Length: 128
Length: 293
Image (cartoon, rainbow over all chains, first blue to last red):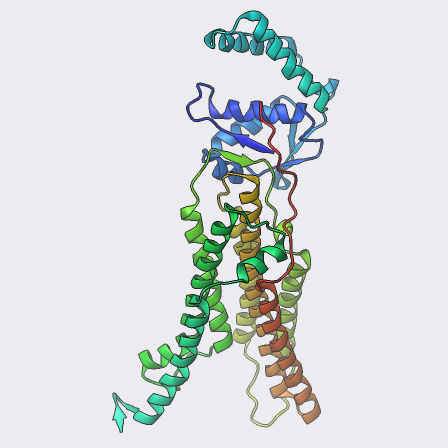
């Protein structure tokens, strides 16, 4: 499972990293109990500052998606109703706004943009 | 004839006994790899393609050259010390085999540091932890810890057993402390150094190159573990020889000597086995398919 960081993207690296990890978890590729790489290893591989990767891990932990077990590492938690954050609706609205802005920047009409969104959601659902 | 305070004939004999093997080592380490690359890749399940063959060949060559230079310098160190101190007698106690193995370890480490410098980031990485037991068999580490424990126990035994032969000196606490410290340093090095090879930067370029790179790291970690295990076993053998010297009975004395020699043979075999091109071991890491948003 490959993570990619685009240095030219307006999205900060920690957010790119977080999005990709969440996608992998949602797609069932990162299963419950999977150990994430140590912060220093991932930071060296991606040529990021350790603080950037640490921030991603902190946010994932804050969202209840991973759990840190000290020197044993950071592990993926089961995604169930209990781990869905209380402000999930607000987060979804934010994500939709980001998507809408990006679609608008790319000059896509709303119908095409929604088709792509449905397709991506369908792929995620079929991968689980 | 006397040259610079040394007997000319002795100097010639010493120079030849040092330089001829050194020349053989260098020739051995710098000759073309030939079919060894194919044997190496086959043993590790690495498909050799247009992309992986040059990568593997370059790494094997570089690693072998660094290790050979380290090994040769280790081999020459005792001779150089005689030359520098201008005395064949006032030398610090050193095991030439251990110094040579130490040189090899330094060379292997140098090759890894060199590889780290050349590994440019690609902006992509695999989200999987690189753990030592995926790259080196767990039983090798068990051997390392066992050898360290054996060296420490034998050192204590050596200290506790009173000298029974005429003229035997009293046991020295410093020798005990030195042996335990050496065992401790070696076992810590066996935990740390192979991890340096495994955890150095690994940017993702393609799945086949990643598999080749994993195999290369595993080979380096094997070589370091092998040489550190050999050094620990040599420490064990040294303790057995010491015990043999203080034994009163000839049978016990020779039993310890023979056991020590057997351990030296095991040390050389373990080192050769673990760093061999044809040693079969495949890195155990997870799937590598690409899943991105």
